[in-house]
Amino acid sequence: MTAAETLADIHARIEKAAKVAGRESNVTLVAVSKTFGADEIRPLLEAGQRVFGENRVQEAATKWSALREAFPGVELHLVGQLQSNKAAEAVALFDVIHSLDRSSLVAALAKAMTAEGRRVPCFVQVNIGGEAQKGGVPINDLPALMDEARAADIPLAGLMCVPPAEKEPAPYFALLAKLAADNGLTGLSMGMSADFETAVQLGATHVRVGSALFGTRETD
Image 1 (cartoon, rainbow, N blue to C red):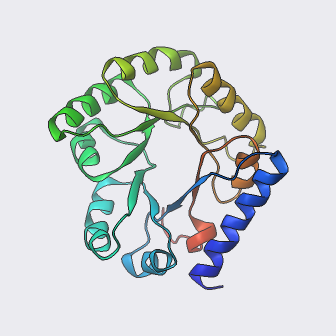
Image 2 (cartoon, rainbow, N blue to C red):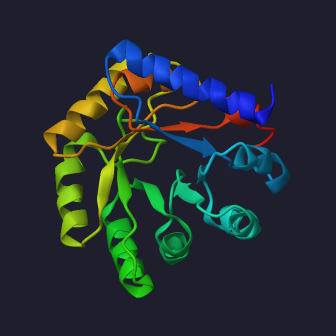
């Protein structure tokens, strides 16, 4: 399929999943373009996609400068882990950050946002499966971290998670939706290429889709 056909197919699947769940299909498709170059991204831009996700600050800065000039209206989302010492660069480059997960990052982002003169909406990443190797705030520590972010005038877009691999994702998506509701948030960044339809059925407002749009990555 062409990029336009692939994009239309993903949107159709999102709409179908929303219909099954009896909800509106107002889901933001974040096309995760990490590791893909400008030549691979351009066809999706030409097909009308404007929201893209990147994992690394430096990689995004390198390839998106020219693309943003050529295609106005692009919205860049940082969907990977963020080191505190990259906070200033991230705030300058990205429109939304999906990986706020610790106090030190709250402080670094708040300082960077004040210096840059812009407040960047952030999803709080939750370690939904309690996995030691993954980023994300532990569930028990979520309310305190949210309080810190609000006190620092960081706009909270919602919650984000990456469920444990090789496990049924639905219970984890449902838990994230409950945590968001319990904490007064409506945004849910959850669901990737293999499970975004399940995520939509359980309330996702943002799905992060990479390989289903771009094909298999050679590197991560």
